[in-house]
Image (cartoon, rainbow, N blue to C red; front, side):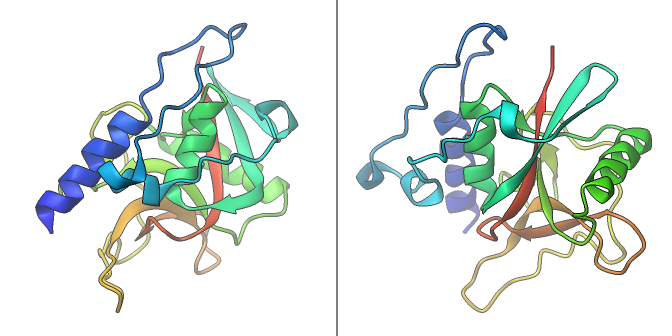
Length: 191
């Protein structure tokens, strides 16, 4: 199982590598490997909705711009694909202040009890969460009580992707969830 998770994580990283483009240049089209050569084709959908980052709610925090993906739900891989296709990536959170700003904005849009993907994952090594968007280990955390728990579902899937979720009315906290779960997401653009 560890090898397949590492392989999927590596393939995922390779599938979504997109060079950073200037704001005036549209990012290159994603190159997805053929389904028969890798599991990556099972993780994402090549047909992206015709929405773009300019029709998504936006807010700023310091030097970052965030876009709330609230027009459709997607699994973690497809959400990441969508953000990258539009020259962004799933958000990474580095402080309580940043987490609070995300929570405030999500509440203001009326989505406080929804789930939102961000770029945290432990797909490469169980229990070692890092931000896929930066490749850096997660240092600031805001886990819900008892999380991460790597719950294992009847179908064998484990929880390896990080979401924001207010499960008990006490604010958006972090939860590890099955990457295949379809929910909203937060994209981030940095200068």
